[in-house]
Length: 355
Image 1 (cartoon, rainbow, N blue to C red):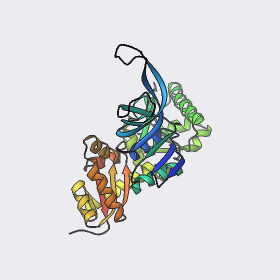
Image 2 (cartoon, rainbow, N blue to C red):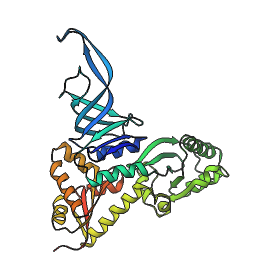
Image 3 (cartoon, rainbow, N blue to C red):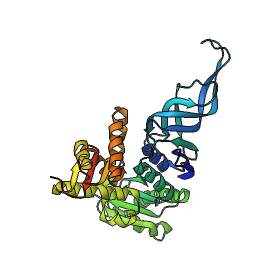
Image 4 (cartoon, one colour):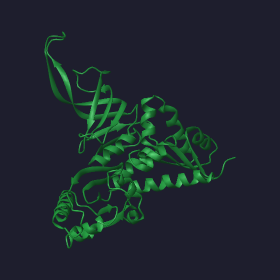
């Protein structure tokens, strides 16, 4: 994320998201009521004002909308951040108040304004501008199939599935070598497009060792870390991210930090001492000034916005900032975020035990 301009007095920031990860960050920062300005495509009627007269053309214009809806769907093919709302300022032929949706893509300049800026949102933006995620590829495999994914701040993005026809007997290497070569070629292509720092290879049994042995002296073997998982389908990625073998590889990554925070709060909840969960319990801890940090999922925020009950939650987060409680946004797209959603989407760690 590039921050081109910021004016704290006006609450205005101009940024350029550089990749999909930045769109996810913006989806958690931009909120209902913000003003968003960007270049967009709009259908405009040219000619007579009657309904059947004139013609409709698509025109690239710069519009400012007051945000009503935020939608980020990284699993869709387009992977766009869509922000909809009423037009507040723009092209003269477009009436103010009419609705428009701006699709935000990487390398697109946008300006947004909010009053006031919550500390957690500003910290999130600053972190996105400073932090560069270590590029990591994930591969879970067995003798017949390999799933390859790229690590993302919101979880992981599955890139491809490679099917093989490996013989059951380990001394029959022809089919096995062909399958392994196909996997290695794909990993090599991904590394060439976007150089990676690490490649995590995981499997049940001995398939990962056989694969690395087949790769021999290939340069990518220096980037490989092996791990054991109980299954070889795409669901094994969540298990892989928790393995001790990959902890060092991921320790600087945001998703690893999020998982560590969730594990910490779950431990405190299980001990019945310094952990609270659910909106009412977290609210009570904030009102008592006992909250050390709050974990809240992006799904919790998204649903609150959709159900028009976000205003009191926003006020609660501002109250948390006043007592110096840290607020951490957790992605619901990885396993730890889903576990937090199972506890109501919000939890906290206390400074001291409440009575």
